Structure formats: structure tokens, C-alpha cells
Image (cartoon, rainbow, N blue to C red; front, side, top):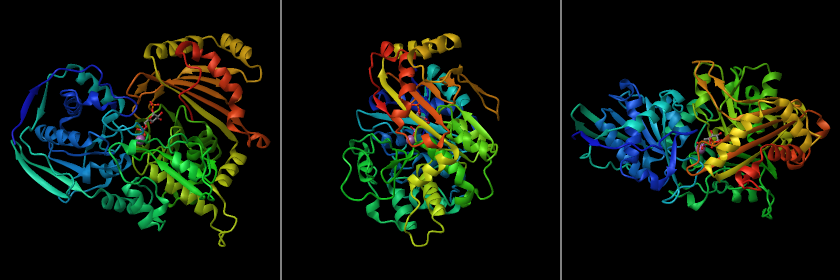
Length: 560
Ligand code: VG1
Ligand code: CO
């Protein structure tokens, strides 16, 4: 093949967000839009990570993925990449990509140095919905801000990109290696059976996996579950028209089967249920008629990991959570005397801690849980961790009667550590200017605590005092890099918190997230309905922020 240098002009909206660049498919289909971003990514990396390198290209199979994969293959060839690894049909979950980068060895001994992951995760897919692309590094984790900032700078000045226009499309449905010869020698595209390769890694690592096609291999073939226990496990370009976000709103079918929600089924629900998002890095864990909040989930996994999960039998190196995630994990870390870290939202911040041996288990309130077996959150890993904990709690229960259930495990945890009542309000597609104004108002307000407390007491006299307020800023303890403006926090004397931040994963308008949390140590008060318990704080949050005044919204789009 030959290398063509194609002239191009910059787009000004290619700033990667919390987890890569996510836009409507229509935006990605603009002339050279994807090309510009891919070339800008190559240009942001050191030569060694591009020339002669091995890169993984795959994703959640959403609409436009197949076209994008062919474009990236041709551009990689032209930029001197030596080989591209593609999961069969272009399908690899986000955690699978992370595992493949870290563990897979090619037939010629090659190892991957990075990956383009094609996903917009929990955002809907299809011609009128979202597409996304993000770059992961040689540790298997998302590119740190230093790199994503560079990519963005490059997109603003890009003048040309390189492409092997005459390279034929590669059949990514067929397993095998296709070789080409370019000006710098051989270029290979290696299409591999992602499932078998991945299950091997699973056995090696004991505990992690992916959804869809992979769920069958792991839960049915490896663990002996019945196939009828799997729902919606055929990958689709538009996710069957659904919203692939595992929460009580969107995983309707599962929620009903588990006896939760209004339309719950007649049959006796199963003891355990779980869902994953489009790229299988998120998870929701449910017991019979019982929902486990993600913030509790990571705390419970951390509290039981050493006893229940063989991978951690040597002890935990430390634990970490994102800032808006509830402090349930903090309490466990304190009890067990574990190193603890609070990082900004987004998985990229956990990677450095793990690479430095400072963190074994981490999680986010947004249905993300994971460990240092890879550098992404991992939906199936979380499910396997929970199954291990349930098995451990029932290890002396040989009759199988009086099972210690998911609900029992959570309630016992609350009784030991206290309960963090928690909810998140999302205001989607708010006018971007209005969202900025609201945030600016809150930053300004927080500089005068006496004034804040006067307002708070005027709204509800029964909530505690605001002891501290700030705009969260993170200094990475490993490389010293600083991330500013990561959300506004109001920290109350009794441990309650209000957090406001703007989403970095949306593809249109602005999304305001409001996180509300209240800590209850008194074991006689841990069984309340969450909405009731949080009502006073919710009222304070909405009035203090003048939410309706700024956004025109009297209610959130969702309340999770
Ligand atoms: C959201 C979540 C965040 C998560 C990110 C990517 O980001 O809040 O916790 O890491 O999505 O998840 P934001 O900026 O919209 O709040 V995934 O599964 O979508 O890639
Ligand atoms: Co995801």
C-alpha cells in the first residue's frame, strides 16, 4: 500500500471528556472528523508508541463502529503501526480491551502498546444516537489528562493526516491474520476470537469478564448457570433501541424480574440479579426485591475481599473512590486500616495508583466497580466479586436453607459501619450557559460559610451546619499532576455532603449532576426509606443552588 497525506481543517469541538470523545453519529460522519481525531491522537503519542507498535482497535459494536475500524486500520498502517489487533466483529468490551493490552501475547510474541476503544458506553447507539472513541495506554488504562489535553491541542491545529487509501477493507468477521506490505515493510491485521482469548485471561486472573457474548461463556459454560438466566445477551448496533445504562430506570426487564418497581413479575424473584452497560464496564447488583447502591457495593467488596476473593487473599494494597461517591468506602478503609484515596470522576485517575501498588479495589457511584486486575472498571468482575461474597457468607450453610441473601449482607454491613443514604439528581440537556452560571454562583457562594449557613438554616433548621465548602482539586500522589474544577462540595458537620458537578460524557447541551449523601451511624435509624431520610438535604440542595431559577427545571431528568 501507499501512504497518502490528506489535507484537512480543524474542528473546534474535539475535547475528550470524562471518558473519551462522545458525539452524535452525525457529528462523527462529518468529513475527516474521525480522521482528525485519530491523527491528533497519534501525534500526541511518542514515536515508540506508534511506529512499529501493536494497537488494539475494537469496541461495543455500536452503529458506525465497523466503518470507524476500517478507517483506523488504514490510518494506523500509514502512520507506521506494525500490527492491529481486532476482536472478532470488532467487539471487545472496555474491560476486555484493558485485559488484552496487559495480557495478550501475539503468535509472534508481540504485545500491544495501546488501544482505540470505540464506545459511548451507557449512551444510546444507532444512526441518530451517540458514537465515541477513546485512547487507552500501555497499562491498559484510559489516557491521562496530560495526553488527552495534547490530543485536544492537536485537533485545533491539524493540517493533514496520513492514510493508506488503497488498503482494502479487512474482513473483521473472520479470525486470522491478514498481512500487507507498505513503504516501511509488513503490516498485519490480526482478528482474534475475543471470547476464548478472554476466558483464558479470566482463568489466569481468576476473576473478571465481559457482558453479552462473554456472559454466556463465563456464567453458563464455566460456572454452570442456566442459559435462561441471561437477558439481552446478543450485541446489537443500536442496543435494541434501549438505553444501555444499568440502573433502576433503564434495566426495566431485570428490575421487574427481581421484584422491584411497579411492574414487578408474579413469580418469586431470583436471589441475585445484575446488569451491565454497552461496553460492559458498569454494573448494577440486585438482590431479591433489593437494590445495592454502587457506593455501598464497592465498600462491601472492600470489606470482604480478603476473606471471600482468592485474588486478594494476600491483603488489599489500598482502596479508592471518586469524589462524588459516598463515603461508605472511607469508613471501611478506616476500620481496616487501609490506604485510602479520593480522586476526580473518571477511571483514568485510578490507574496511576494501581500502577504504583497503592490501590487494589476502587469504585464510583455511577455503577462502576473494579480492581487492579486491569485498568478499567469491570462489570462482570463486580458480579463475580459479589457471587464470591455470597458464597463466602454461606460457606457453613450446607443445607442451602436460610440463605444469607444480598439484602442480609448489605444490612449487616450497615449495622457494622453505619449507612450512607445516597441519591443523585441528573439534569440533562440543560442550557450550557445556565449550567455555567449555576456553577459560578455556587463557587462564589461557598467563599462565605457564615452566609451559607444562614441560608441553609433558613431553608431547614433540622440539617447540620456546613463545616467546609470547596471546589475539588486533585493532586495525583504518583506523578504530582493537578486537576482543578472537579466539582463543588458542601461538607456538613455530621458527615453529610452535597456535591455539584457538570457531566463530561454527554453529547448535547450540559448535564448538571447533584449528589446528596447523609451518614447515619445510629443502628436504629439505618432502615429508613432513602428518599425520606434524604428529604431535608434535597430541599436544602435545590433551594441553596437556586436550581429551578437557573435551569427552569422543577424536577431532575432522573433521580438515581
Ligand atoms: C460519567 C460518570 C463517571 C464515569 C463516566 C464514564 O461521567 O459520572 O463516574 O466514570 O461517566 O463511564 P460524567 O462526567 O458524565 O459524570 V462509562 O461506563 O460511561 O464510560
Ligand atoms: Co461504560
